[in-house]
Amino acid sequence: MALMASTRREADAQSFPFWVYLLAPLLALGLQSFAPLLFPRFSVLDLPLLIVIYFASTLRTPITATIGGAFIGLAQDALTHQPLGVFGIAKAFIGYVAASLGVRIDTESPLTRSILIFLFVLLNDAIDWVLVRHMLNQPMPWAWLHELVRAAVNTFIALILFGLLDRLKRRE
Amino acid sequence: MDSFVSRYKNALVLILVLVAQLLALAIQAKRPAGPGSDQPTVSLLRYAVVAVVTPPERLIVGTGLWARSLWTGYIDLIHVRKQNAALRQQILRLRIEQAGLAQDAAQGQRLEHLLDFKQHYIYKTLPAQIIGTSGTDQSRVLYIDQGSHDGLKQDMPVITADGIVGKIKDVFPHTSQVLLITDPTSGVGVVLQTTRTRGILKGRAYGQLQVVDVSPDSRIKPGETILTSGGDQIFPRGLPVGTVERIVPDPQHDPLVDILVHPAAHLAALEEVLVVTNVGNSQSPQEAKDIAESEAESVAAQKRASDILSERLPSRYDPNAPADTNPQTTTDANGNPIRPPAPPAPVHPDQFSPDAEPAAADMTPGHRWAPVKGGAEDTSKASQPTAAQQTSAANAGTTVTAQPQQPAAAASNPQTSAPQAQKQAAAKQRRKAAPAITPKNAPAPQGGLR
Image 1 (cartoon, rainbow over the protein chains, first blue to last red):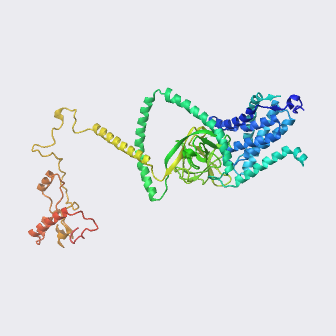
Image 2: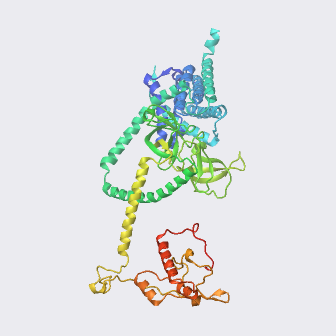
Image 3: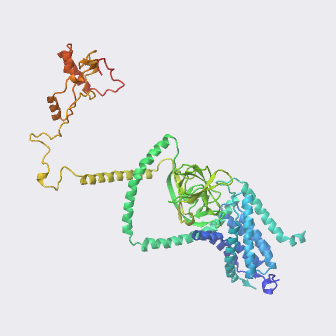
């Protein structure tokens, strides 16, 4: 099967310099917070989610991805006025699933990446919607067209971002 | 057991993390919303994240402002004198306009005081720079570079010169979170300017604004201005909110309608806002001083305008005309002032001018000043002022009034004698010196007088 991680290179343990683990989520959070001031449409992107997906599918350790996703999600929650946990729950789950799939699937192929990112963005939004609408009882619409466009835009940006992050990999 | 944990440790960690967050979320959701609703742990976490994220944003915004101020403050100063003069003229004009409006405002304030209404005036505002957002459409909040150290508190209104922006939701030492009016969880009391329809402004999905659950009214038209009503106890009354965009039916509360609103403030591109830090029930001393200055300038401007007008109007004396065309003097040959000609004498006697009739106390019951003919007085035979009287009155500069028909009455009434005439003259003098008689204390008319 073409999607399986069959080659040795794909199964290699991959790692990054320590500063990348620290700086990438912070930059994603900072840019996500600041850029909409200059470009209001920027908020359609979810850079912290893309960072979670990238590190989870690259490092392939579900526990680290779950905890990392939860921390990044909680930090994103802290910047909103909503109760903490909405983004934390969604990103912890996405991190776990992405890391679990990363063990089995070739996540470096552009096609696989595109499909995975598209589905993960939709899944993330669905979890957010369920939590906000049914647990917090707050108004939140679900428009399929908007969600599909949002997923497509995030996928496009993710392909560029992941290519840049791949250059920072430390291969053993 | 160990093998179970080691086998399913990934799933167990996931479940543990999810359950912990779900519990925390449930606890937070059960707490009522409002100031200080966050638990200490939640506040601490928010503060930690904001403390990490906002300083770089503040640095970037500050650097951008510094570069911009360097350009605008030192390099791009061409035409600044001309612009300054134009602005001074504009200030003068606006002050004059403000004086007129201040009169109306003062009158409205007095009336509101009589009706015991509470008007909130903005005393003090604090400018703040926008340095960040929440980064998501689900939560429409902004971050500003002023916090509790600058005197900000929760629920303070945030405005711009164009209109309202939102309110302070959370305060940190050097940063504050502003909840925009476009957020679905926000609510602002508003009133439509023309129809005076009241309602609650709420945010919709994708950043739209609407006044919800309004009774249908055909007078509400697109373009009508919407103002704050002051009913929310946060925003002072009368601040611009936006304009009516269109009216849509409310499917959940038929037959009520929702009014979609175009915001007055440009919420998508805010750079600087004003936080209202102090409001009061009367005008601030500075505001009162400004209005007093405006009124003084308005009076001076009106005086100048009347002077200019009087110079332009045609005058009896033209300083530029030849000497023989202007009247030389305003006195006649005898040195008496020239007066306009006296008006013609009245055809009928005047019975309404002061002193036209004798005092009621001096009247004699049954006395008539004109002979009775056919059951009615023949006024044509009553005595008239003489030509000499008219001339003397004209020279004295007074209007000629018909004297009462005292001589005729005296002639017709044999009881009227010289001592009585003297008494009447003395009474007339007393009445001249006495204050005006109001209808309430006026003496009752006596018989024989009309």
